[in-house]
Length: 56
Image (cartoon, rainbow, N blue to C red; front, side):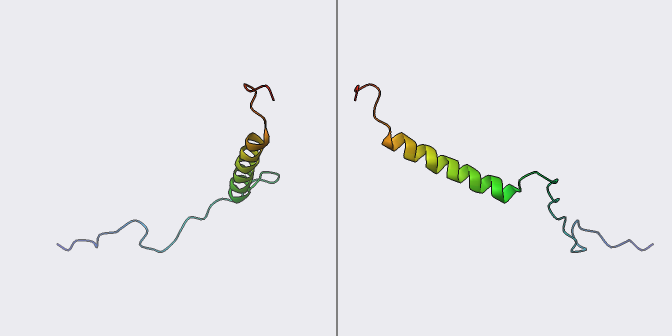
């Protein structure tokens, strides 16, 4: 009796690509860039804003 060769997942070399976003939906890269820009904007705004506790 012969045994079949063991099959390992992914052995065919086929890779699943990320699905294309639906029309009108921003891509993952665009969302990441926007999130980074928003964080920078909020930090800059917080630095320029006077302290409310000091009353200035």
